[in-house]
Image (cartoon, rainbow, N blue to C red; front, side):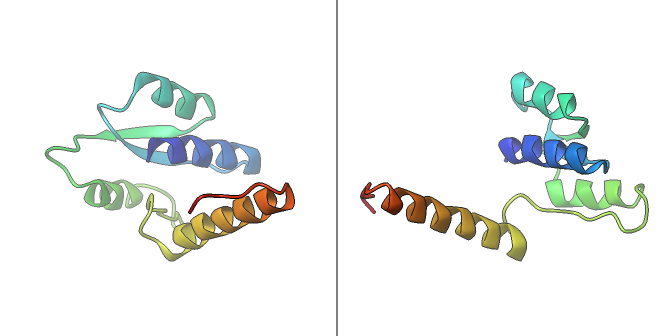
Length: 102
């Protein structure tokens, strides 16, 4: 998810740590520019001929020891974070007396 790439680049900038983002070469130019504007180092891959996780593994081997790979969706902390955001949204809307249709 490219919007997540922007968020990681911004969070990394705010914490003063580098971020290397694995992004498909056909990503929308606006999202690429936003990611780079927050300091994200973008490494491109071809989504039709390469597997993102394999590219990420190769790139990680070139980065400093301790570098962490954060997959876009299939990681326990990412899933927990998405669930937390959903719960907070529901709680906030209920506090505003707004009913969700779910």
